[in-house]
Image (cartoon, rainbow, N blue to C red; front, side, top):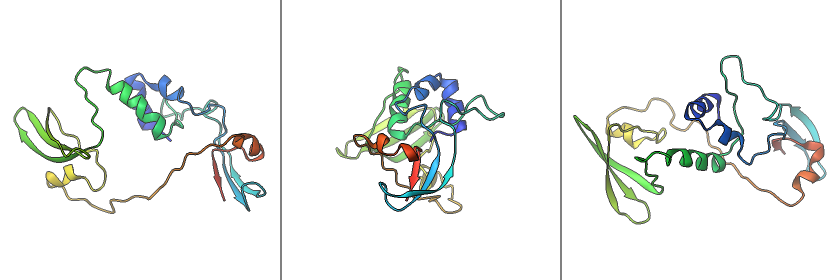
Length: 177
């Protein structure tokens, strides 16, 4: 799920239509359904209904609504947008090692995870978007307050032939057994 605030950034960047056009079905209900028993023979014991993405409206505080676009669909949209700029290189499978700050910007040292090849990257700013165990934050001496792990989640995306057809009585975004 992409939150409203992130979708506001997508609007500024001009990529809302790309997010809305992701392959997630716009007409599929966003209900959460609770089922007792098995997938095939179980029975519905509760439902939290929510409109489909195509029917949902933004809240009064924003022009945007949240969007159902899993990371495996959202990441290529962001990469495509980032690569539209001449000064952007996307480097997957690299880790941050250290940085040096001077009057004109920052030089960061990174390393390829598989190749162990080290590179220096020069920029005006260094932004630490590396989570609660941020090495960037540690390097500049800012202490972490609180629990760095807000939650532990696992997403599994799967499909089978006829899966939607076999579950029409429980059509929903999330099924809990």
